[in-house]
Amino acid sequence: MIKMKLQKTKENEVYYYYLKNGDKRFMFRHKYVDNLGKRREKKKSGFKTQKDALRSLLEVKAAILSGNNNHIEHSQMTVSQLLDIWVETKKRNWKPSTNRNYTNAKKHIKRLIGKYKINTLNAATYEREFVNQLFSEGFKPKSILGFHEVFKTAVNFAVHDEIIFRNRFSNITITLDEEVNNFFTPEELKIFLTTAKTFGNITQYTLTLLLAYSGMRKGESLGLKWSDVDFDNNIVTIKRTRDDLGVRPPKTKNSYRSIQVDKEVVDQLNKYEKWCIETKFSLGLKHTKDDFLFISENRVNGIQAAYMNYFLNILYKKMSEQNIKLKKITVHGLRHTHATILIDELIPPTDIADRLGNTLEMIYRVYAHSFKKVENKTVIAFGNRLKLNIK
Image (tube, rainbow, N blue to C red; front, side, top):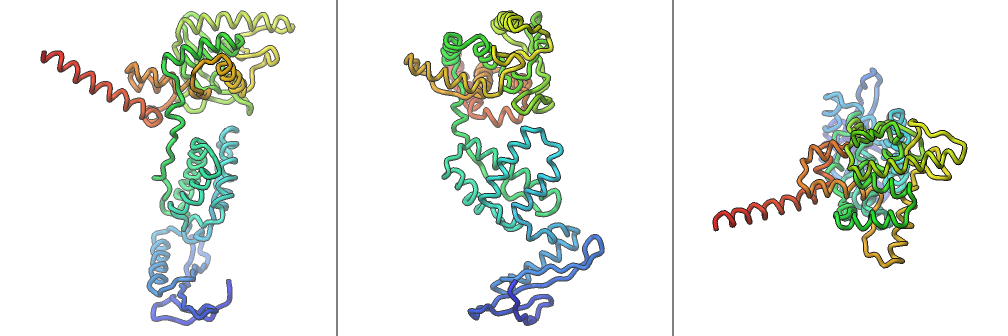
């Protein structure tokens, strides 16, 4: 800080000084004892009026009297510093995939708003300098929402640790317009599955069919073992998830579940297991119930996480060549398709939540647009029925 000649004001601990250009400024200096008994001083300069300096001083005194010393002692903490402390404190509890996602988000947060002090960063600045900037750089809404959720989690950590008083960024919304259309209608799904069967190999088609008919996550399907399939009762049980980072427990406690599937799926799984047995035998390997369900001729120990993405790219290209008119959805869109069809069939939301391994709150939030359509249909149906009765 540039050395300045301080002059006392009538208010205790409030001073004034002059800048080089002659402008008058105010500051406060407050001495106190922290929770460990150490003497400390909190000071802040740059106020244009004595009233502003005094107001800030009183806020500091009130915070210290209420025991919120962390807020005072970390008032100069930047967003970058907060993120580093948060990661070092919490990373031991994160799964590898979570750590990867958080690390990527932290990189962009630091790049755009890392220099800002967390105590003074407001929602408008955050939205302008971070959210809007990411949109202008071409990031997809889903990615931006993911970064935003990571930032809010870090800020909640700061609130819990009394570094700041509240999360000022909770009410910022990022609309996922792309997710609203990331599903097939029943008619579109029939076309999609028929095309997948025509152009895909047996692994690609079986996996596609299972995802569409069960609504399970891609990682859950990759983590399935043959011991998880009950052929007698048409049930598939989710016990783990798998990706390129390895095998782990399912995403949440709700994700542990047993899913009843259609006989068509079970029949296809029966055919597929026979193919797996023959494929492994040709390579001198023995098929066991502890083997992962989905394999390929090149990866008999389990296909990679990008397998379905690769297949969808090929499939959409084939559709274009064959002039098959069908919109493109993602692998996760098959899960959305499953959910939206169930909602349209008026299946209770609690049953859908159990089937997808989600909370009821999550189902209502993610599929709000689908429930709104069902509500409109219900109102129309009631009105039509009433008119018929009156006649």
